[in-house]
Length: 291
Ligand code: MF3
Ligand code: CO
Ligand code: CO
Image (cartoon, rainbow, N blue to C red; front, side):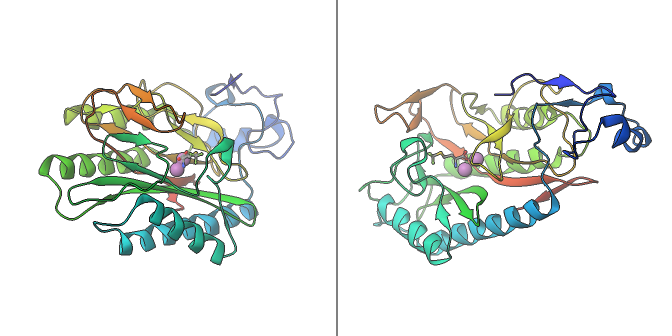
């Protein structure tokens, strides 16, 4: 959650994390961009990454992407979600990295695998994948202390037209969200655009989970809504790093938590699809770190 978010004034510490007062740091530069401090909302605490941190985060994100590519080669009918867990775990460790989900708040496995009506945080087990299944694999890697987080949808063999369409629109939602990322814009634009696209296709957007700042920890500020009004949340600023990871439901957006207290499922049993990237706000727009 974004706690204690406030408008920046001249005498506040600059948003960039320099430790200088805003008026002695980025104020003049922001004014040349048509922005004054009063138009910038920032959560407390430095959430702007240094160039060195971004290099580290990018490396971790590139490994995350590699792992998702690897999974693509192996997913087929007859394997279990535990098999995916093993491949992801072993690949991650072989590259000198750590799978972030393992033991994170008690999560028991190294990757989230969310099948069909599972929205997110599915725990790998002995479930066999069968023709027609759709699944999300969500990989988070810690490399040299830096976090990268991304997820994709996979189809097992021949999949129904309905499922294909959901997967396609969910992916479009992610990229439409990413297109909204520009410095000095409100983060609310991201969720607004995503929801509009989902609703246009008759789908709903999950509200109980969102994207998040990331880099030095798994989940940092800000919280990234995938729905709602454009003027909500913080101002996107250069070198902020966060995920966008819309969960799009065929039916209702409400979630239900299974007794394992992780697995979130749709309340109507219908399908859900999710794609995720880690992105960085640049001086002019956005850079996708997990691509
Ligand atoms: N990777 C998920 C995300 O995108 C978080 C998974 S938390 C876990 O935020 F504990 F389930 F791994
Ligand atoms: Co994430
Ligand atoms: Co993730």
